[in-house]
Length: 453
Ligand code: SF4
Image (cartoon, rainbow, N blue to C red; front, side, top):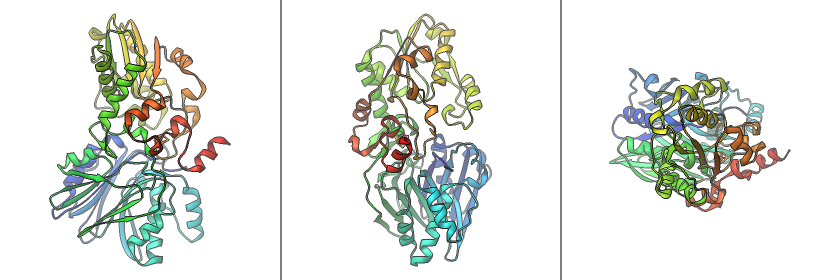
């Protein structure tokens, strides 16, 4: 499958130039993708600038005119990370043009592509986004109305998609009917915004109005309009709360920070340890470590210092880059950890290689014991909805039980939160969460079948 992505999207319509606010919003969501960035604005035509690199690199010395625009930051797996796949994507067709940015991953890409190619479509990129864009253009041509075209096009999509579209000076935001990926609506004076995370609204001083609803199309024009697509069971990605989103974001009414702290508190309750100090794997383990410390009464301290000028190890595309990454990225503070029994809190263990190296480092720097506590239950199954966890072989918990993993990573003890604890910490009904990577129950049936063959 091409274009497995975890990205961020942003859109704004205002009575003032919007380039700067899109820039700041993308900057605030850089954690969701560091390989490419792009902005499209409308000023009696679409202006587009996109390239590989961080937001600050891509837009150095750039300004795009216009009072409406969309933006995107991109993460992709290797093989599809060239600039043609950077977004927004601009489509020119018989009824004009539009720009589209997409966060998510479709699971019926091949089927759709095959159908469209048999009708004469030619694809330039390897991304799902182009399929969505061409489908929208075709349906617009067929039905004569753009919003009807969007509605009909997205009804054919299966998988995760949070979309922002720039058509003329209107912004159209679409959230898939499962609502896998976050998408929020914000407002400041007469300007309306849509963003993957509410932290982007904070960055532009806008107020969070609400989440875009599952299967909703929001049109930000002279007025705000809302349309419904089809209905499915809501399945918000639990990994957004555990790892991906920024802790200062609020997703589907739930504070990410609150969830992470609670995950740590529950771990302290369910898996206590005799220790002198709680330390986190920074940054994503910090909030849970604070929760663990508060609930256990064991002091929290900084045992590992992160080089903040380095991208996230987990989302670097190649294994070799990951290997080098851990060593450059984290350094223990000898005076803090020497001779101490540590509780090391991490958000999740996927391959187990990172935590193993960290434990080795802590021991090299004098830690007496390392007790690992993990917020997320064991990750065992691939994600088909846009998170870069692709093959079961990648997951240490696929082949090994907790005790074998403990031995493999070299911890003195190891405990994970249970799925019930995870659901308790998020506080939403379990049936409204996607938990597939931890329980194998895929919201869209095709993935269940794939796993069973
Ligand atoms: S499979 Fe896991 S990572 Fe993927 S959408 Fe579901 S909960 Fe999120």
